[in-house]
Length: 214
Image (cartoon, rainbow, N blue to C red):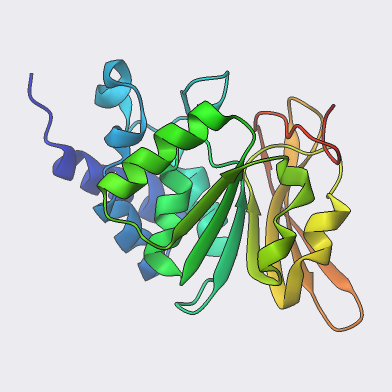
């Protein structure tokens, strides 16, 4: 059976995103446009627009579409923003960010995942995604400060190097908690303090590195 992926994306946006309160028009437009099925293995392409995460290599996952939309919307991005993503994974989240902001710097622990993600992003024409393989808990100091930081793996605590690389007024989204269940937190840098909001419970793969899970 031939799948109409355009129709599948529209259904995903209507039934999973709009129905759950996602309203940012830039986020909705990005997720209507990006061919999510290209970011998963061939054997999973027919499930790419389902309401759940899917496995990719190295025991990692491509996040549930709603979670991608929720986290992106919560970052309150504008066109001129520079964003640091920790955990490139499949590359899908980086592509969503790249549709909305100026530049995406993305760090992935596993080189083979990064190579595959970068290849798909190049195929789709993204030139504003800059990627490297490294310990994401250290951030990417050379390009700081960042207007937004998005962490796509669960951390035992917020890595201090990431906070240090957040610009004044910058926003960070990060799952914090145990290695199985976390709470999605939004941290905003103000002049003299970090403002913390707790959003929803979530379940991400563990964030590995010096300031994450060992």
